[in-house]
Image 1 (spheres, rainbow, N blue to C red):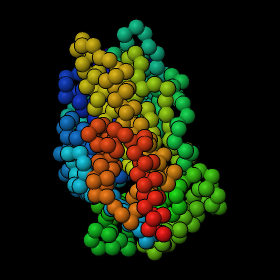
Image 2 (cartoon, rainbow, N blue to C red):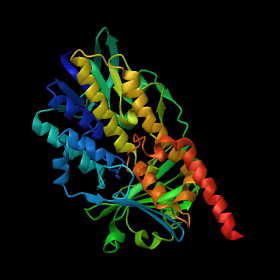
Image 3 (cartoon, rainbow, N blue to C red):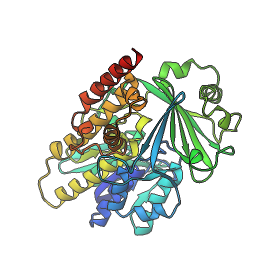
Image 4 (cartoon, rainbow, N blue to C red):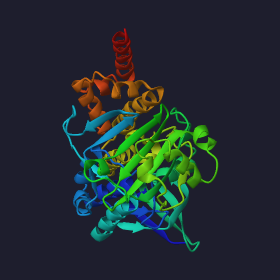
Length: 414
């Protein structure tokens, strides 16, 4: 059995693993990425938010992405019957990127790994991690290839960027239930042959069918569109038939989109992900760190997945570089507490979305432009900016504003 010795092993080659590997490689460390799948491969998380652009730029991965001509996303639209709430990323409280992309992730992720391979980063596809053992200051990871051969990798640090694979949480018993309500999603791609001209045809939209159930519509620049429903698991399972028959029934619930997507062939049998919110007992340990969906996955309603993946990857890579150079790192404060602060802000928004409080603010008749800009910053991923009241006081401010909205509505009714 061959044994390889490196500085850092990265598990998973998605955006999180790519950002971490790119940073450490640029800093001169020996890095190896092992990925269970062969790229390109399908994965969800097709709507990005502006904060992740900072990370791609910082590690030198922005230019290769710009060359691909992905659909530019400058905001997001939320519909509730005839009510419309639009967010424009250029009108937000926090300075930062005012655009990002809507992407078919198969092509997006392969663009990242192609660029890394071109630079000389060691990436091995179709390699599955089956065991990890920590010995003193190193870890020994056992990897299985598609022919059934095993090899070991000795590393000073492991970054788990395995996403829904959640390799280390499974192997090290780090899983714990999420506090986010049990929701599932069902989704596919369509060739969007009835796509309207102009902005209407290209904007990302969340169509709210009921308080807890909504349709996502994410148009891509290649003429295809991702459509998917999110709702309580029991509700999605109440529709009869195959996943395709279920999704077709659900699309009919959207008065705005049923005609656009009616009877269009689905590019693949719709996939269903059940109870997708995940959590862990800890985000790091001696010789390892969890990033992105390996650590915490919330809910797709505000498209936070890739941004948490790249934020955690970039930060953890910087801290690993610091530690490998002999400097002290306070992982609890510099990594865990920092990441959890952002997770808690977004968790509040996800929870208050499903209580209906956030929807009241979005669809109020008396819109407050300052409040809207502050919420827009959160939706753009700038959830560590304490100058924003909707970040600093997130746990009570959403409820307070929703309550005021209710009172104003009552007054107007009288």
